[in-house]
Length: 281
Image (cartoon, rainbow, N blue to C red):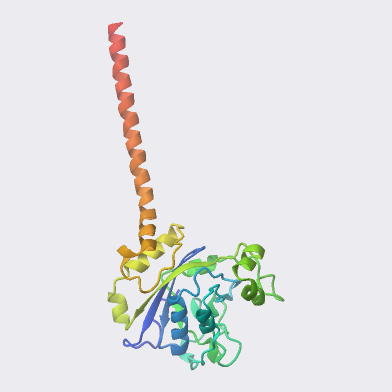
């Protein structure tokens, strides 16, 4: 797993931390602007605008890659933004070979990057040789295990496997996946935190990200979109809901203990009565 430090980062370069809940568990990514400036800005902006929320990991090929990035938004301007292409960034030989956990764009040729991304598995070393595949981020904090757990039973896309095709995903949206590929995993929601430097990232308050990761570990689904502007957790219903859900097991334990104490007291009273009855006889 990536350690979040990255090669070739200057302390003054912007970074972003993307913290997501998914149907397979928590997922946290660290994006580096210095690695791929154009790719960094496009991917970070799409996550900030909720484009990937509830979208599926539609191509999961063990030991190769996980691909996603066809969102279900109905916002015309956001769709147009996601479908527009960006210019390639220079290749980064210093980041090669591709390693597990790298995040990059799934392009089809020069200047073809739009919204589709992939996360590399452990045998993707041949990737990254083209400019449109220059990585811009990495999976961190041990959450690569979530990526490894993503459902892969359908195999690659046709003709190499029996997975979903991109055309029907675009035309039919989530219904196509739900009806024909119901076991595929998906994003729930993501939050984004941009920081101006690695120093700020290490010193910053990461309590919001920690709450979302904890909610994902408990299998809790945060239904409302969490946006980067929601800096005040107390005013954010989604964060408050996740916190309340985490308190439920503790309250249940208190009730169970209270019940056991009551039972013990009742048994004690009953025994004392039986002793008195025995003495009177």
